[in-house]
Image 1 (cartoon, one colour):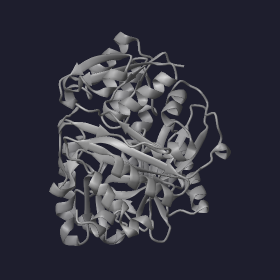
Image 2 (image 1 turned 180 degrees about the vertical axis):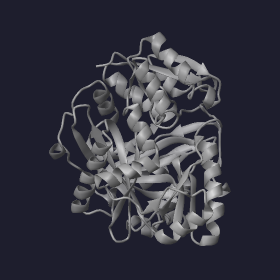
Image 3 (image 1 turned 90 degrees about the vertical axis):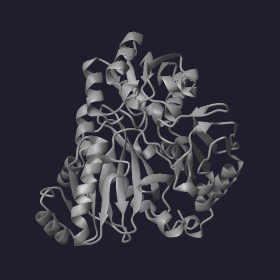
Length: 447
């Protein structure tokens, strides 16, 4: 097992990782930008080092600086969390060449699954269903028009190296196609330094259902059930839950086996997420694989009782999975609300500033993952998510009621948050009945 691990991240995920490292008796090393000097992850780590100025490109994305801190402190491994460098092939390669264990899959797997076109091709070869689409010749509008007609409108243009809803445009008619390709390509180039895009059939009113997998370095792979991430705004997840209200036990078993097949095809190791779209006829299609821990991993931890961060670390240290698929039991229902420093009534404008007061909900089955505290300053330099509120109960209705109570109890003053936005969703009859799709917010709410 590792003696010392560097956490190459900030905020709630850095705090989350540090807590598990300490529980495992592993020394936790944190890094921080100049503006994050007073952050909670800095206060909780055993050792902390400034990595650069506020700009992420000069601090949390500073690969030479991160590796230097790891080498100077004698860290055995680096945990990248999510975001920043978590799915950066070059970072994984540098760690590997420096003799520092990257807590995640290999650089080769990250590269392969990060290229949406290569990932699609691999899944097709492996017998995993994918959304009908095409990736060749889209730079020629005449060819693109022909392929879109063959696939059938509406189609969606997506960035090959994309994620987080960037480089993505829905096209409902031929006259929209050329502009959509140009805009998606430009956006992808700016976000990922790769302007290549591909085309898929756009599934109307699908569910977004993802399966959590764990794979050790000895060929053992299991899945830990699904998370329904259909409540989204502009392709960004808002609320996640497990189990999905849309799946039967038989569907869960079948999709779980398919997720394992996908992971095995990619020669995957560590924790990962296989993402599917589920259409109105219960057909499911692979869309991508996230080669990292997910923001929404706590709902899986609640329904399975498995610490995913601990398992990531164990697997990276070369240990075998300590359970089989038959050992996994799913109990109750869990939901997660992402708490952001933003103003839903003002086009979700970010709301950085000083937190004056904080009241954290409590009680059985309530979890609050965050890096904030009274007096802490929310910086404008990073993502607006400041916390995750997660609840568990014996069934979905009880979990919904618990989340409503917890949201009422949660008080964050000094900044504007999206707590009321979450309350509006939870009070919606369609949501409470489990009758929702990825366009739920646009269709049912005035946001």
